[in-house]
Amino acid sequence: MKKSIAVAMAVFTTTCSTASLADTLVLRAGHSANLSEPYQKGLEKFAEVVERETNGDVTVQIFPNNQLGNEREMIEGVLLGTLDIAVPTNGVLTNFVSELSIFDLPFLFDDRAHMYRVLDGEVGERLASTMQDNGFRLLGFYEAGIRHIVTQEPVNSIEDLDRQSIRTMQIPAHVAAFNEFGANATPLAYSELYAALEAGVVDGAEAAYTNYQAQRFYEVAPYLAEVSWTTLVADLIMSEQRFQSLPENVQQALVVAGQESADYERQVYAEMDTRIREELLDAGVEFTQPDLAPFRERAQAVYSQYVDTDQKKTLLDMIQQQH
Image (tube, rainbow, N blue to C red):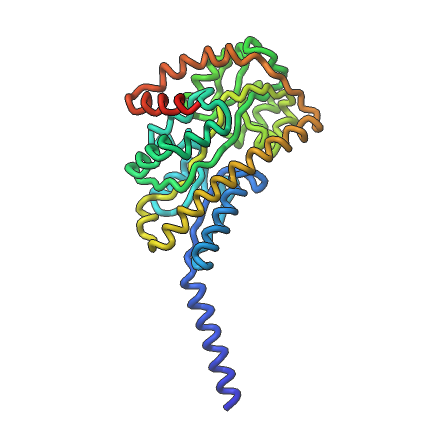
């Protein structure tokens, strides 16, 4: 009798465990950065908050380093339903939501505080609504770093960029900006950049402190000109259809997690910038501070070219009013 009860209890326990596993919803999230970078830290916070808010009923698996495809492929995966969540660079998402290109302009934000006011205010709300109209649910705006110029020879002024081949992302406003700065903008896959610098295929690149250190670009481009030419935005997204398919309590958990993780990711980025700059100095990186006035002046041509709709003009006015 005791043996029968023990067997029954074992079966009951196994059945409950199996049912519990079956009831747990697993969401997959992908991004392009490595494990040490803020995207990863932000998504770890996101997963923690989702699990907390759903009492463990929903878990988030994180796939870094483009394991699930490059950023464009991950965006397409979100729309197709093969990936739940992604954090693409804003400039890549503009291929799907053109209004987001406002964030790709050079020297758009005065500083981080200005950017956060814009992202968390009416501009961010308007763009979230536009994204929803295009099939995306915005869960939060992450930061992707204040960008500088890293080169094999020092850049002390804008003239030092003349005819230098500088790697940029394949984002039209970025390409246009570096061409206006006098460089030869060279869109190139991120995965190919170290080898291209090492072989002299390109003379330099634009980068944030974080990826400059994480990818060890300083080994082949030991000069960093602190120009803060743009601060990149990254969009924490899932498909609107997938979001609406989830129970209301899970939707609410995702919204809470999105905001908490965005706040945390931005904090991590700012703290890492301060620490990494010191580490780069210790590693022998030479920093220069060219006059920014000529950069800002030439950047105006990019605004003339890419602020090309009434909606973008309105958004730009709103951003500039929040200085």
